[in-house]
Image (tube, rainbow, N blue to C red; front, side, top):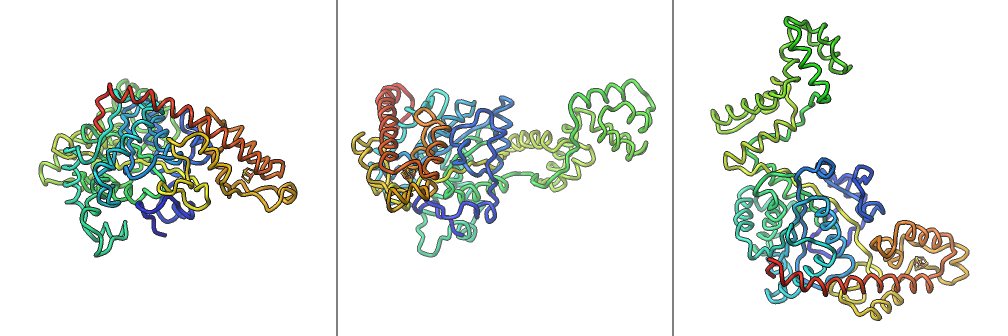
Length: 475
Ligand code: SF4
């Protein structure tokens, strides 16, 4: 299965993404107050999103970044990414929006003037959806020097064979297009330039090749080889504290005696199994110094040999928690001039089907509702849309419609909560599949709902023009 990030917006079989590319199924149950697109299964896949969920839950630093090639009208299908970015910003993410003009220029042949015009359209919608420009950053690839330097450095970590394997380039691919993949990778890692932090990239599934390239580059730019799995010895902090107190109060304690003091079955078993000989080793795990000691050993090795290859060994000696040490390792990497990047996390959404059936395309106006469409034109497009309905009303009542094959149903399912909540979307599905709903009325309702949303969004875009004038955003 090939995925082409510059092809039209469609993926034929989402389940193959799990098997062939290692994307995990998205599970919204651990996400605090999930976005409607998460609850409705439209965001269907992820990589390493648990790091971001944890950061949201614990109020820790994390970032979110996404963007667009400014190469066509912004339509309802595009708004998903913008809504996902704003949702993460509202949950504490350092949020970045990229205008991928270098990519649009090299991969789509867009002129710089066209790029500027479309970029403005995209940013107005981003602001209209609630993006806070004071707290986030909007940039153009062509004007970000730090980004270009990073892209250049990333280029040293890859070669033509790898780009060819990921993107299917051939001898005809122009060098600018190839270079734009490194610029994309630099975009994805850009939020971590000041400080390594978990970073989520919300994208359509077709963008996964960029994530695969960047995750590899993030690992290769690390000074230390830290990706090996380490079976960390997990115990609760309160138990660590209890045991530390027990150790302090009991000189010459035996492993068996210590095991008695521990209110943790797994730990007690490990203490007994280690015996007195292993006691020193076992008690080290109780010490908050363990990560620092393991880390110091890593730093010594780096100083002696210029590399660290015995990471697991150092962890093992001090029985230190892998994540704690990794955090310290990242700090020292930064001190040693490295980046300490976390491989980027990602979430993937499904694509909206074009109103004319098939792919939704920015360059085919009838296939999409543009955010700037006139309200009556938008209604008209919905009324002319392809449906999953049957040949006759009678057949529809008898067999039910096919909402899973219906672009009009998607207008409900992908709609913002403010105009169509989960219950409403579910009711449309049930009524359609059960034959109680006929397409004429259904399209008319979907047209009204779409026009209502557009009207609100267009008003918010007008207000955003003022925000844009008073902001630092230069587009
Ligand atoms: Fe689509 Fe609505 Fe017709 Fe069902 S009733 S097929 S959802 S237009």
